[in-house]
Figure 1 (spheres, rainbow, N blue to C red):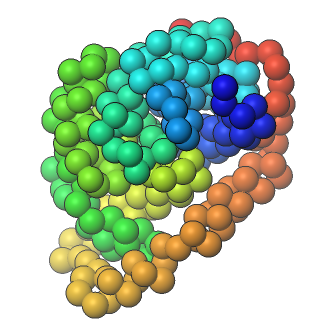
Figure 2 (cartoon, one colour):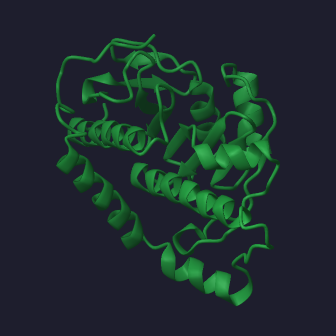
Length: 247
């Protein structure tokens, strides 16, 4: 049996990540965040019916790697295959986020490759593109998407959104934030109508080494968590009554 304290803490992290991502418009009425339970073939994810704006710890469900519901009162999102197929292929990945970020999606629509142009976004390297834009609601499509991701940290779903993979919920959250911030700065720079200056060479290497540390992940999470508390975004997150407003 999974340690209940650890499971409770992970559920709270997931609920916080979802609410914070919704507050900064990286999630909307759709999208999902998952976390593999260490040493098992199970994972936690927000339920399909839970509002992303008011998700609580009670809206986090447990499934096996075939998407079968093991604990919780509602089924997982229809795109759970994104998470299961990545977990099956990547032992290094503990958390997966599927979101719908504006600027990354716009760059994809314009067929513009994402480049490292911003300090904390310098981890952007190769962002592959999965060309099918519909819901990833079959195991076959989930497997294709996971193959497209390969060993990278993010894959773009053309005309749809983005998937981010990381070693923890907090790392996946931080990567999601700065992938979008990097894309926004790239987009804005391109509006000036000149060639953009991309980080490269030794400058890129040093920037990555100094700007993407565990301390940065903690700092990003703490900033957004404290801001969310101040703004009331996390109110009632430990409620035991699921917020059932979506289907």
